[in-house]
Amino acid sequence: MAQLWGGRFTKETEQKVYAFNASIRFDKKLFSQDIEGSIAHVIMLAKQGILTGEERDSIIKGLTGIREDVENGRLEITDEYEDIHSFVEANLIDRIGDAGKKLHTGRSRNDQVALDMRLYTRLQVQETDRLLKELLTVILTTMEENLETYMPGFTHLQKAQPITLAHHYGAYFEMFKRDRLRLKDIFYRMNYCPLGAGALAGTTYPLDRNYTASLMGFEGPTLNSMDSVADRDYLIEFLSALSTIMMHLSRFSEEIIIWNSNEYQFVEIDDAYSTGSSIMPQKKNPDIAELVRGKTGRVYGALVSLLTTMKGIPLAYNKDMQEDKEVAFDAMDTVKDCLDLFTGMLRTMKFRRQRMAESAMNGFTNATDAADYLVNKGVPFRDAHGIIGKLVLYCIEKNTSIDALSLEELQAVSDKFDADIYDAVSLKTCVEKRLTIGAPGSDAMKKVIEIEKEYLAQESIS
Ligand code: ARG
Image: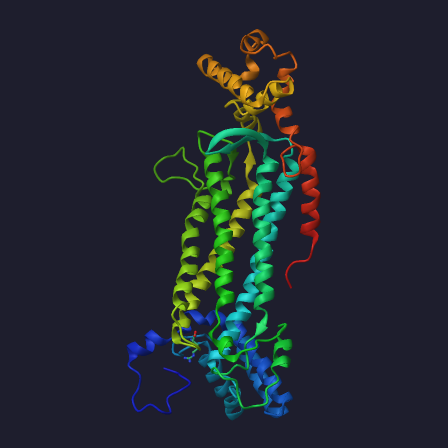
């Protein structure tokens, strides 16, 4: 047992209590942030005359030595320490002796862990954003290549109107673009430094909090020391953004699973991204999409878990807050893995364009356009709707489609039908005439793609 306290205790901690209380098993993830924060802290302490230049240099040398040794495996972070902060401090004291004992001057583990978690989360926000950008790039490339890949658009999972693959993918582009905007927003709101808040009420040392903040790329120091150590809003916001990303990935996965099914056969998932069955030789399963869909629950779980942990905590720090880590780390890693694998799956997935177009052609996806045709010939829309409804019924009985009917058959229902009906209800016309911005017509889509390209060329969060 290696812990940073004990002076006021007359008994050893019960082993079970120690183990229950310890966090090193998971907070070792904060190792580099702990070193980074400690280095910034001592640089500031020396600038303020609280430590000598010599003490500062020896502490920094000790800390960078620990970092190097851990990075190349010479030093292991073991469970004999209570948490990552104790591990770093104890090793520092071992290495450099008494000067190491001064590292914690004007600092508490409460503001230390608040800082480490923020530094870690800030990095995760950036990494998640980078992965989203890669996904968006793959989506946009597929859009450019599929402006005229026709497919049915659905409502209620029933064929509704024809669209294009570019248009369908474009919907997901918008979702993931909003996800990036959320991350950007979170980044700017969270980018304030809690170090210097002490245990809860600041310190009596003349710390320069602005300076420490600037050393670590923060906008400035946080403005209330109690809130600084008790705030996990940024983490909740990030988990909420991660949950939304997963919701989007899960919806997309669900579609891919449907498109990949024997009934649809719109897509073929690359062999490298599918798995087989141990018993049924014919199977090629969309496991990645299913797993992404399945992992959504645990990311939502992390959000609800932390919201619940935080809801009853009086100011300022309470040990409950240690519970932020395991769920948050798990959610962050899960989302990064999902984004990475999902992007790879999309990049390698093949489309069965002929099959998609055929599917768009049957199922009366041109019924609205047929009604619009009659409207253009002077029939009131409500009547046109009724006439086409009758035609659809007739087609169902004859097992055919509107565009396959003869002109006589059409005219038997309405004398407004002419030879130009066939062009008016062709798949191409149905899509290409939809030219309002945001609609699937390829001329409209091209404009959107230009806007999205400019958007992707913009700088990422920094
Ligand atoms: N392991 C603790 C956490 O994650 C570090 C802060 C400990 N502070 C304290 N007063 N015990 O929250």
